[in-house]
Image 1 (cartoon, rainbow, N blue to C red):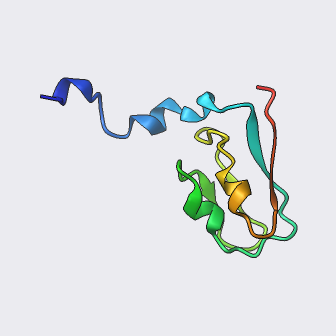
Image 2 (tube, rainbow, N blue to C red):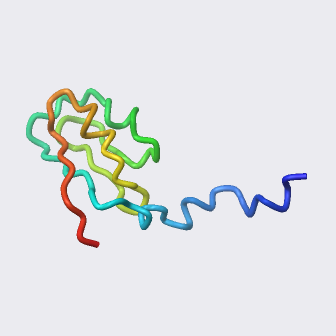
Length: 85
């Protein structure tokens, strides 16, 4: 019934859905990070990577600019900045 509606699995990776981003993007300051991984857990696109303090960053190919990562950061080490693109 719904078969024709589904194109292929994993098409979001091929489509680089970050082109749908709103006017903002995250800026990881990488100063006060405590590697709590809250940003990684809250990201709906799973585009934040990093393992150790001050190594976290995002993949702009998939980030939508929702701001969840900045809102949840306990150290306020992530800012949402204007994205002119």
